[in-house]
Amino acid sequence: MGATLYRITDETATRMMEGLRVGKTPRMFAITPARLEAYLQTHPDYAAEARPLIAANAKAAELRKSAGKRDKTHCSRGHPFTPENTRLRKAANDPRRECKICERERAVHGNSMLPQSADRVRELLKKNARIGSFTSAGLTGYIMSHRTFLRLRREDHEIDMLAVKIIEDSRSRALRTRWLRVRNEAKREQSNDYYSIRAMLPATFPDKDDVVSAIFEDLLTGALRREDVRARVKSYVASHNKMFPTKYAKFGDSPLVSLDESLFDNGSGTRGDIVTRGLWD
Ligand SMILES: [Zn+2]
Image (cartoon, rainbow, N blue to C red; front, side):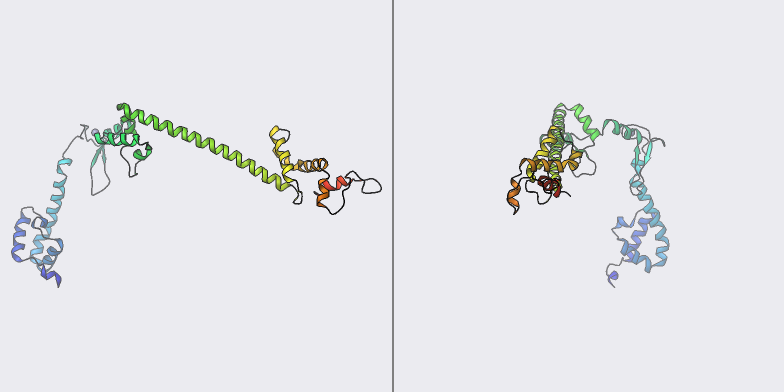
C-alpha cells in the first residue's frame, strides 16, 4: 500500500496533538490531509480527540485571515460601514464589504486611477486607438471606465485634445460611410431599374438598350414616373418602332415593307400595328 510509505509516525502525531491543543492546524506541521486522514483512520482513539480540535482550529484560522478587515468600522475613505451603506459580496470565499457611498461616487466621478493608467491611455490616443478599446468592460485592453476617462479628460488637457481629435475623426468617418452607403444604394437601385425595365421588353426585341435609355431619360427629367414604367413600356417600344421602321427588315426574311401598309382589304390594321402589338399580345 502506497500510503504506508508516508505514514505519520506516532512521534509526529504526539507533537501534532500538542499543537492542536494550543490552536495550531495540521498545515503548520506540514502534514498533508491525505497522510493525516490515513493516520486518523488507523488510530480511532487519537482521532476522537484530534478531529474536533482540527475542525475548531481551522475555523479560527479562517476567521483570523480576514480579522483586520472585518474589524474596520469605516471604508478606506472614511464612510461608515452601517447596514444601509454596506454591500456584502455574495461570494462565500470572498465575503468583502463594499461601501455604497464610494460606489455612487465612482459612478458619478469615475474611479481613482494609477498615474501609469493615464500615461497608457495617452499613448493609445496618440496611436489613434478607439476610445471604447480601453473603456469597455470585459475587453482585454480595458484600462478604465468611460466615466473615469471623462474625468481624466477634464483633468488632463493633452488627453482631452487627443480625445477630441479621435472623436471628430470617427464622426467624419461615420458620415463618409453613411454618404457612401446612400450613393451605393442609389447606384444599385438604378442598375436594378435598368435590368427590370430591360426584362419588361420582349425577349426578341433587338433595340432594348435604346428603349431603356429613352425610359431612363424620361425618368430623370420627370416626364415619366417610376410606377408608370410598366404600363408605358409598350408605348415606348411602339414609338421606337415607328422611329426606326427599317430596322425590322434586317431581322425578318420578308423584304422591306411599309409599316403603314394595310394588312387587310378592309383597311383595318397596318403592318406597324402588328409589329408593336404582336410583341405584346
Ligand atoms: Zn466609502
